[in-house]
Image (cartoon, rainbow, N blue to C red; front, top):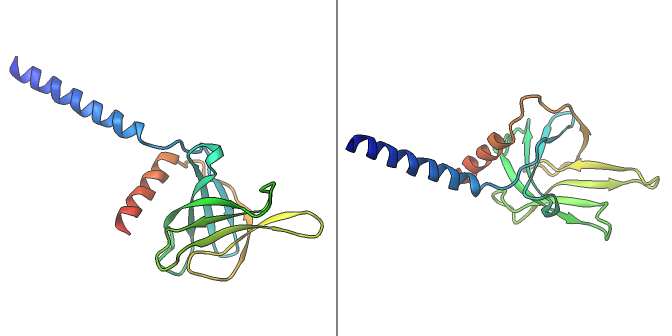
Length: 151
């Protein structure tokens, strides 16, 4: 009987710890936005509410230490309507801030996206790419948490 009580109490404690850890997780977007350049692939996932305009950004294909690393970015508006913006991070080592993605606007009013890959100061134009069918937002977020503990 004592063993059953101990087992029940430990199970309850374990379950409550899992629930508390889950409660602390931010809201995540359901689907990522995926873009590509000739050399790179960029995955962007919303983190927090839509109003917060915070994103996790991962760039694959870099020939440097930032390849495959996920960084939290905040949106900075470049005009009052926020049609032009930058995604800025302060997490890249060796820089105070880095504008990874920016909008561009031509005289005709067309907008596009350019990227300055982490650690590379050459712009690349971004084009929509097909998102992976097996993408798991929670796993992407857990990878980010694992990476920031190693920085």
